[in-house]
Length: 201
Image (cartoon, rainbow, N blue to C red; front, side):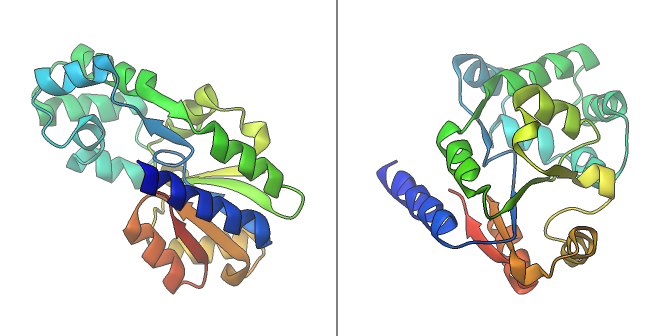
């Protein structure tokens, strides 16, 4: 835990010292993390979620496919219930457990706001079609200049085409962008595209 705190402190220090035009921040896993609450642990035990609640929900093929398609939220849950062989109401309850367990990183948010005088802030999230709704239910999105949700734009991290899309949309070269993400593959993809990228552990 101490190493994690030290690592995050170093990343925040770099962000505040090094000006960047565009700061892209992942939502799930960075701005908001799924805590292992009592209810979360109970759910993991009850449904034998060996890799944890988050992977159980989002690593399923139907969940991965929905990251780049405008599939209606209830359709995703129906497909997930078939894949997991659990009734739809139970899936909805499990999604409620996930939503309740997510908590904002207030230290990171405060640091991001200190970057605002020099950086435009954007959330860049691999999420389903309800991503915008979910994020706005957790966070005052007016703190950011915009949101990019993979299901809305049809591209997800670390697809190389995503960085081109962002560069064209924001009218900035990738070299003027910085990404903070908790997935090493996304960090690697962003770095190869010319962004500065920092892993959030």
